[in-house]
Image 1: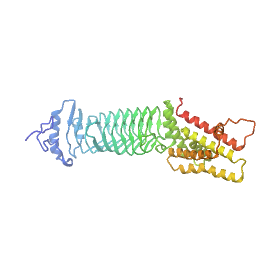
Image 2: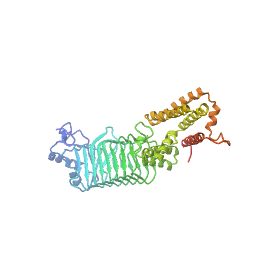
Image 3: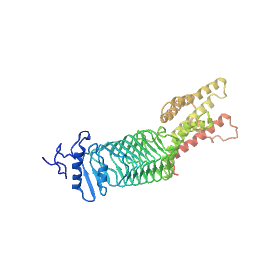
Image 4: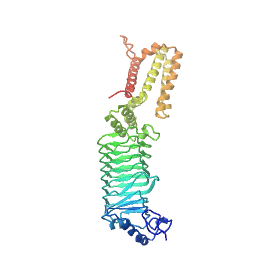
Length: 458
């Protein structure tokens, strides 16, 4: 009988030109006693008195990894490119300080009440992406590093567990569930370019730097009672649904530069769960003196504040916020303020020149004309936010320009009216003129503020 084709293996061929240890096993089935009778002599033959590297072995379904760990407890064992059905460290809790799984394939890993002294899992980038169905860590202590890089995991649940050193979960995809509950990361935690589906961080503590750079959160993500003790990097992180930081604690700096929504654009109001989340992101930019980005999230914070207000409970605040949004999109869009300045001026001068003194019919015309902006705003309100703010003003501007052209109002009258201080005479102002000047002064202030929001230094 020939020898196995596997390197460093001199056992007889069983099937597939390989020995009983390395050959494929249908449904991981194999006579366990027969398998063990070959396994341990093979391990003894490659033992170098320090570290044992067990490579490319396909273990039967009934095999218990404890048998290797306990038999060679004084040595460090590395299972490299091996295949196992399940790994179960729950039935016989004890310390495991001598075993590492390096790029191994398995369906499930269950660990409960375990203390791992050495590296437990180490996955590096391979030509073929490995797939793991389930990893469960419950009340475990991982005292060395953990590497779960470039793999697909269907379900990852980590509960009441402490990681004492660096954790790398880079370029990995959590296909279904990834849940971190009452978990502590004492070392650096790196989720670079990792993709999350149905993710939750609950009572999680990051004691060192945590990296979510270029990660993707495809579903709603809630960092509930999560503490970031040091730098938190969310640079170019993509939140496709909603993000919530309302119960999070940021003790030091956080970097949210270029965070994106599903369209790879700046986060919109629907991506922010609440006003506190927008405030936290805004505050992080303010601490970095990035005033332009901070102003963008100030606008989102105002929108969320507007959502909190109810017209029946806070009528005055509700009106103020609505005016602030319609006039300049919370001091973010100078074009809106400019359009409103021109629109209000056209309306004012038309009635000042064409229907003075007022008759009963003129008041009816004034009332109807005043309803035009309100109807326009209501109709455009059904459109997306940014389009709505533009459409309402473009429509008004075109209509009022035609009105201006029809009425032959001189341009110098328009320009003089825009300046609220241009007519400072001893003549008394009418009530309408006073209201107009207050409105124009407010809009000019919003116009200047909106420009400064995108150009000023702190």
